[in-house]
Length: 359
Ligand code: ATP
Image 1 (cartoon, rainbow, N blue to C red):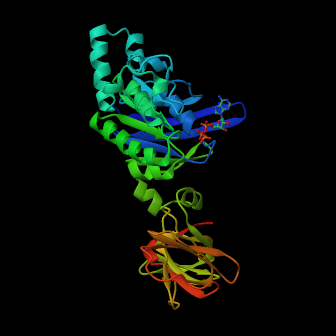
Image 2 (cartoon, protein in one colour):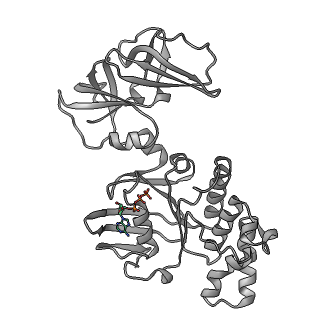
Image 3 (cartoon, rainbow, N blue to C red):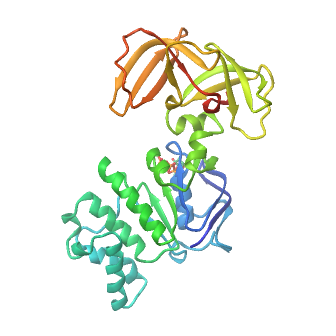
C-alpha cells in the first residue's frame, strides 16, 4: 500500500490553468474521489498521478519516493478509462493477460494471475469469450481485472461506471470498493456522480478552477461545506440571503436577519469571525427542513405551496415566499395527504442544520 502526496502541483495548457497549486495527501489503501464541475482539472490531476503528464511545477510522491519525473510504465499504477479500451478481437483472457505479456512475465505465471484476476471480478467462466460477447457490466469488470492483474500499488479510475445503466452502477460501485479494500489498493477515482462518491469514498476532494476547494470525508463535506459553491455542487441546498446580527448561545451559533425572519445557524468556515452587518448566505438542505402548521420564533420559512411531488419514499415540496424565492423541503416517509395548491405552509430547520456561509 502506498500513500500519494501531491505538493503544489501546477499545470497550464496554453492560457488555461488546469491545476493551480494543488496539494493533497492520499493515505495508503484509501479510496479517494476527485469531484468538481466540468473542466475543473480532475482528469488532469489523475493523469499526473499516472505519469502521463509532467507538471510545470510541484511534486508527486509515492510514499517517500519522488515520482514526478518517473515515466508512467515505471510507476506501478494502473489506470482504467471510461471507454474500457478493451480489444474486441481478443478473448477475455487475452485482454487481461496483455499487461503481463508487455512486462514479459513467464507464461505459467501469466495464466495463473489471469485466472486469479478473473476470479476477483467473478468472470473466470467467460475467459474464452470474445469481448463483444459480453454485456456492458461484464466488460467493465474485465477492464478492472486487466488493471488489477499487474498488481498495481495504486489504481486510477476515470469515470469507470459511466457506460452502465443505473442498476448495474449500484452493483458495480460496491464491487469496486470490495476489490480495492480486499487488495489494499490506494485508489483515486474521478466521477461526475455525486452519489457514487458519497456512497463509497473514504474521502474526497472538490476541485474548482484547478484548485482544491475542500477535502474531507463525504459526511464532512456534505454536512459542513466551507462555501456556497461546494454546498451547491454536492447535493441540493436552499440558500437565503441575509446579514449577520450577532453571536448567540455562547458563540456556538450566530444570528442572521433575512427576508424570511431571523435564523440561528452555525459557521462552517474555520477561523471566520464575521462582523455585524456582514452579508452572508443561510444554507439549509431540503431534507433538514420540516413542514409545520405554524411559525416558530425563528428558523422558519413561510410560503405558498407551489409544487408537491409524491415519490413513495420521499415527497418534495416547493414553497414560494413573498419575494418569489423557492424553498425546497424533502419529507421522508410521507404519510399525510397531498396539501392543496397555494396553501400557506411553514418549514423550519434546527440551528445545527442551518449553515452560515460567506456570500
Ligand atoms: P470533465 O469533468 O469535463 O471531464 P475535468 O475536471 O476532468 O473535466 P480536465 O480534463 O482536467 O477537466 O481539464 C481541465 C482544463 O484543462 C479544461 O479547461 C480543459 O479544457 C483543459 N485541458 C485539459 N487537457 C488539455 C489538453 N491536452 N490541451 C489543452 N487543454 C486541456
